[in-house]
Image (cartoon, rainbow, N blue to C red; front, side, top):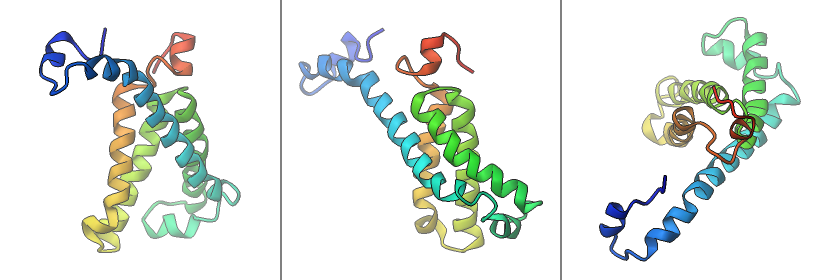
Length: 150
């Protein structure tokens, strides 16, 4: 099914762009998934080199035992980012990342008292990952290639 239907083309200010939008629909979604996954992996690479380095910080947030949650945080960001980028187990990986980001929203907004301005980036990232929790990896993903999605 085309991303831009005949009815939606008629509502475009420049209807001729409807074909371009349709052609780029999946590519744009794939690009967002790959970039989000790569960025999450890069962010997690700092933690995966010292997977227990955040133990004290996560215990300060109330997650005990800190060593377990620190390791889980590092793996979620690093390996989850890779999974999101390639589109394999996209929904579970995005859900795990979403959970991490919602904790960072709480941390910045409430614990640190920074409000929206402190949590803004985490909220944006959470919205991006929520999109992939809902949509999955799309047709340009490993999930689609193997014919199975979570």
